[in-house]
Image (cartoon, rainbow, N blue to C red; front, side, top):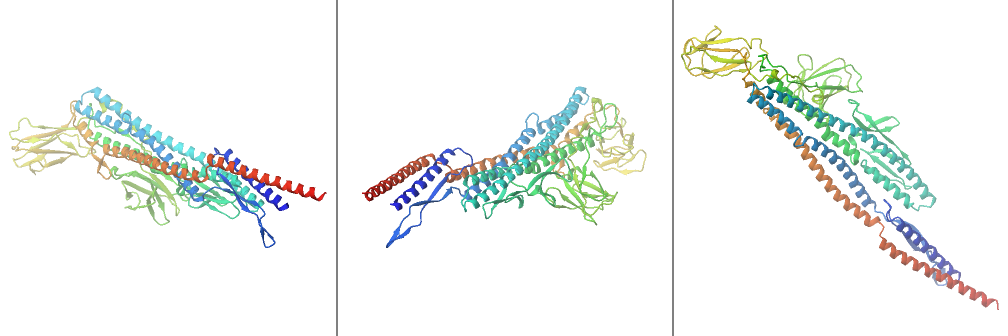
Length: 630
């Protein structure tokens, strides 16, 4: 009878545990990160009895956590990628909306400025047309600076967000380390039985961490997991959590990166961080925000160079040569905070057509200087020696170096980043717009031949004699002289260059025919320079002289739109993959109330049956006692 009682009690206890676990599952059906549990039952060791073995009932082997490591890792990985793409896409959408606006976007604003120049060309004497041009010029300046300020604000937002994300990463790492310790202690205390609820809590923290940054985990003996980020930097080792921090860029203290704090100091891991919201922020800054800063600056440099160079070749309503129309900021040269020497670098833009949208790092090796792209590290070939009069030349830039640099000293070169912030319209008086050409030509009133002279064009506005009156006189039908100089053979249509201007004479002039080139003292109705200005704005000036300013703006805005659309497509595709992985994980670890209800009924009936066996055992025992008392 004792065997019957013992076996019955084992069943009663086992099914009570099963009911407890089922109740636990049902109670946590809506608990995030909970994995359903199942009692694993097994027969207790049998005892030999006569010529056979007598079973001793049932025992609880373990409470198994219904969890698939592979499925969980897949879901964690797609979650990290989805968060990365979502942050990247939402940030790119803001850029696209800002620059691509059909009314106030970059393309529309530039076109209004070009149209205003054409308006002055159509009515060069019209003061209202000139006022409209100045208004559109100021609007263009303000819009460019608005775009630049918004990009700077987004830079600050990235920094602010990175600080918050780093604080959360450290909190999660501390939580994982603490649970690692509790899990190891729990497994040791129970002889190897897993503390399932603690495992769920740790996996939930790991999932949250993966949404911040891509992680790799390695399980250790004793139940702990080690967590690595970046290119293998340990964030959690057992019960010890390392700490990450934001760190200032050695060239630009306003730009934050990510560093791992170690006993020997901080290790910059910015470039090795991937995945999660942190990876999305860093990639957006490197791939979209910084290039947009540089592209906007390059557009401003090209605009200023085109307008200023042509505006200087015209004269205003007072007959004075035009000055600069715009002013912009200089090239930024930033020395690394790690530099030990006293080296200096002076950089100027030599050829706008050669400018790129990239930043550069100039490094001194101890014996020579080398230039590389800041984003990829690829070498950039240079010519020259870097000395005054023979500067290094690369990508439209000239570099002069000086001082006494130490080996390893570096300088960050930003050719166009600061151009927009200092952009100014230098003209406030409409009459100072140089719409007219500085020279005019005329045919002598007594000419007898059929010669004709072109309106003339300026080829060197710096020539001191540009505005001097000059007479071309034909000494014969085939020769001419300039201001009484030596005879020059006449070839119809050939360019005649003198005092910084160029003219062409065609037809058949006769001996003693004269042609004059003089200062345009009354250019009120002259629109020649305004036409050239409007034409210059559509001339190839970017990408080594293959792309016009308007086309460059279109490429810039279009590239942002394409990148945004691609990011959105990638995000939406990743969301589908992640949902599928979550569904797979839920099918393994999720609580199914129908299944739990069936288990509840099954275990209840088994429990009642075991209780009934105990009652039978008690009845038999009482019968035995009653029989022996007689």
